[in-house]
Length: 248
Length: 258
Image (cartoon, rainbow over the protein chains, first blue to last red):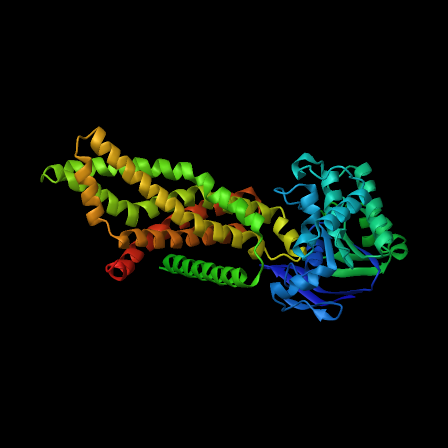
């Protein structure tokens, strides 16, 4: 379904992704983990064509996104839903208008159908009755849930999560994890989550890709990664810092 | 020398990118269905909410310009020509330029700050993931609203400026209003009015394109948004003043026959 080959990306002299390659099959659930600044968010944005690589290929259902114009990419992106790190809700629209946005922009004009689908996904993320609230009236966790509702309302084939639990307390993080699993299981959506929350990675990722210094250091099943005897992987999973390595 | 070359290069790149944005906007206007609710929202923000500031500026400038002109013309006993000078200046030059500068300050800054904030909070990226081109949804309604609103605001500024000067002449400066009005009708051509409207249209396009470009390409963080907003206002104002000169040179001979 998604095929990434020899992907390279630099920002100025900083090489962020270096020959990254992996494949994602339909219905798979993958967690991309790694330390801050290793290019996880940059990588996930390549998968949906928000960032163009310096070299390499990103193929979605056999179509190479590299070299496509923005308008060609808009068509490919109908297959995707994405939850951003800060939810990225439109602050001039209320909750219902935010969620209805992808439906209206893809030509759905039946208002009763839009209303029904908005209510359905709001119910799924347990935020029924918040239709008329503005994003500024919602807590961080509620914003993430509305962002999740907006990402799935048009029934995408692939959903991308960029740091879905960052900045949330453990209880709210747990609720987001459960919602992501509920979405995955209910709609059988291919899921790719970028995170450094190990609980989130363990629960959502059937397969885990560990990025280190812009390269795929390990690509294995969740069980193999969490039982890995590799010192670097183990330290990362346990959150053990080697002060010489830490960049403050 | 190298610094001057760098400034020249940046200027050329900036002009080129705004021109490319203009091409994309025109292409979008003719190929993508316009979001009418967004257009109406922008017409209200850009047009209706600019009326007060444009009226105040027009009235103030009309009165000051009239008084200064009258003091000079009084020396050669041509008091009743003051309103004619105000009429020609307000319709052809001062009206569009003042309305343009006010809109650049109020609306241009607003557009850049809004789009810049949307960019740094990933709202524009989110829009792109939902199969929506930011130019179709964000730039086109703002462009159309500004090019529609600017001529109307210019007419308001000019009419109010002339009216304020007319009242001032009769009620404070003691000049015969009837002969002033007659002279103004005689000397102010349709060409002056047309030139003002064409300029307003061009200024509206410049303000919206520069402001949207700056907003969509601003650097990350609050500093980036602030810098982009500042640059948008400065560049819009300079482009209005520079293009006003060239438009006057270009349009005057063409519109002479009107």
